[in-house]
Amino acid sequence: MARPRAAPYVFVAPFVAIFLAFSVYPLVFTARLSLTNWRGVGDPMWVGWDNYAYLLTNDRFWSSLWNSAVLWVLIVPVQLVVGVIVAVLLNSAKLQLRGMYRVAFIVPFVMPLVAVAQIWVVLFDEGYGAVNSLLGSVGLPNVGWLTTGTWAKPTLALLFLWKTTGFIVIIMLSGLQSIDSVLYESASLDGASWSRQLRSITVPLIRRTIMFVVVLQTLAVFQMFAEPFVVTQGGPYSSTTTAGYFLYNHINRADLGTGAANSLLLVVLVMALSLMFVRMLRVEDGS
Amino acid sequence: MTRTPRTAQTAKPTGARRLTSGHFGRTLAIQAFLMLLLVAFLAPVVWAILSSLKPANDIIRAPLVFDPSSFSLDNYTAMFEDVPIVRGFGNTGVVLVFKGAITMFFAPLAAYGFAKYDFRGKNAIFGMVLITLMLPTIVLIIPLLLEMKTLGWVNTYQGLILVGAIDAFAIFWMRQVISSVPDELLDAARVDGCSEFGIYWRVIVPIIRPALAGLAVLTIMNIYNDFVWPVVIASSDQRATLQVVLSTLAQNITGNRIGADYATVTGELLAASSVALIPLLILFVLLQRHFINGILAGSVKG
Image (tube, rainbow over all chains, first blue to last red; front, top):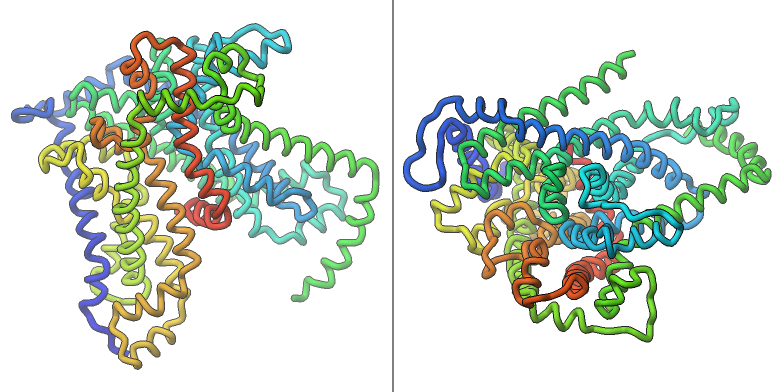
């Protein structure tokens, strides 16, 4: 049946207009901007690769990447292990209260991050927080969760884990649903233990889901911004100045050329990391 | 179908094993572990809401004690005086209505165009959707801010609403949903003299209503919780969204209440956070099925 030719163009036109105005134009602009020195007023001054050279030799740029890398190590492996195990437990039809767990675990993910971050500030206060009060009740000393370089990163990592692990569980669950339950049944008949089944059936068969989670969370961790902005303002001693927060500081100082260069470097880095993880898991697929 | 009898056979030994005491112990351990996790996931939210209803001094003196007889709304009264949270709600409301409406109307419409028509340039244009999906937000922030300055849109509703309107993921998801609607239905409507938009409005929309409900919930959640773009584009008091207001609570409180001590600030901070949590919490309790559908669909966008 003949369909009018103009109709589909009309339907997609609003999206295309917004895409050109607020994605293509700024993207082209950002590349040019990164080669200039500009403070938001007057004419941008052409400086070639200077912004990149400046960043790549700047200790604070590298330490922002390092801080994000440490957070990545504190977050992603923990989240994968907990995510897979909890999803496997919730996937069992015999489990009592299954629906309740599924709903309760997703609550943190639904809550606004900024509000939760504010609650974190109060909960983990060194002198008056509920966490230290709880530790004190079993005789443990107060910990400077947000005031010491040692603990600030783990405390932020905990916030991130608390906020998103339920979401990861849901993703893993959707991956598990594609596994044929016959595999488990024959494995238990052969006497394979629970952990053996996890290693030999579950993990290999949801490798694509795991890969997806790793890429998703790598992007999220390196862009982490609201957590340090609200909870620690990047401190103490810049120990929680993440890559995302460092980038924001360029905007704050109206150092836009450097900021543009920084954002492009960061994108190249996260893209490269994502590609590397995809490759790693592909190679294992082949063996 | 051939595997049904096998399943029935294998189910027996597993069922028999359930009766052993070792299995009972394991079930108990699993329940204990999940229950512990549940408490950990809910405790911060519950603690914050309950604490916000205590006298400010008690929050810091005895953070773990809840005495119903000392129930108090003082933190809320003080917070509404010191924090422009009503204005924050108002701004978020405006953005929610307009940005939400734009996404809910134009994204499924574009998805319909992609799913049910062949037209020149379709693949290229759909490529734009995929690029938007994969592009990290941070690359665009600085040039977008400059674009907003040129347009005079800093601290305006236009800036908050139009940037990121017509969510690419919504198009991607709805395209999958609409693809599964049989073409015969559309052709039948066409024979009956329905216009192309009429087909979308009278045939497609009613069929995909459940997915639209999931999309609506996901859209509300994303817009309500959005922070990075609003804090860059609308940091003025006049246009600050709820999340932006929340992000600078301590400054707001100490700025408006000279000499406020730590207890006062903490009490107001928890009151403000609770006020921000509760609308979503209620929405979630009422529409949890749509939330989980929306989040699940949202998770497979890779």
